[in-house]
Length: 105
Image (cartoon, rainbow, N blue to C red; front, side, top):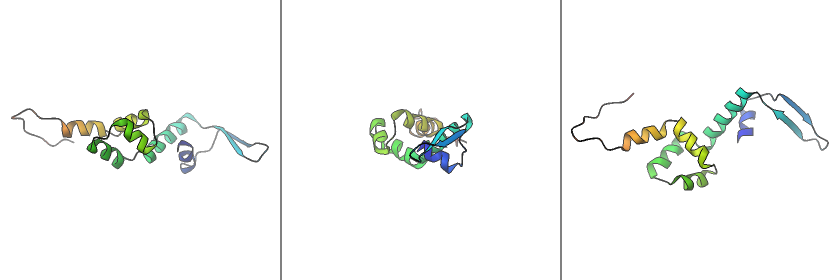
């Protein structure tokens, strides 16, 4: 998905050439483009709606990672960077008695 993200984002490789059998070989992309491709790949593999469903259903991380064909590291990164973990903790954490709930921005 990372390589597809480079194509979707119209990234130009630092260097590219054809090998003997006609295949295009890319030597790499600039660091900022690699970061952009990482981000888009993660977003395509684990969109926010999927992350919310994983958390709300209580699916164990190893099962969710297997279902979506990603590593547990990728799952954890997306849950943290999207704020879904924080949102779930706030939403599902018990409030002390007598504490009024207030809207959160």
